[in-house]
Image (cartoon, rainbow, N blue to C red):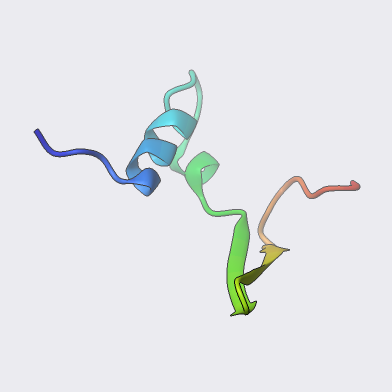
Amino acid sequence: MDEKTFDEKRRDQLTSAPNSTEADAAPRIEVTEVGDGVKRIDYLDSAEIRPGE
């Protein structure tokens, strides 16, 4: 039996609620590794809900 990837599991979870759509599973962040194991997390402009709003 094939194991689902993280992205497949995430999509399944976010689209399983009643009235959910594919848009609910759209990425909301971008992770960039800037070096020495440091990762930068940016919220995409398309994210409907952003921290602090």
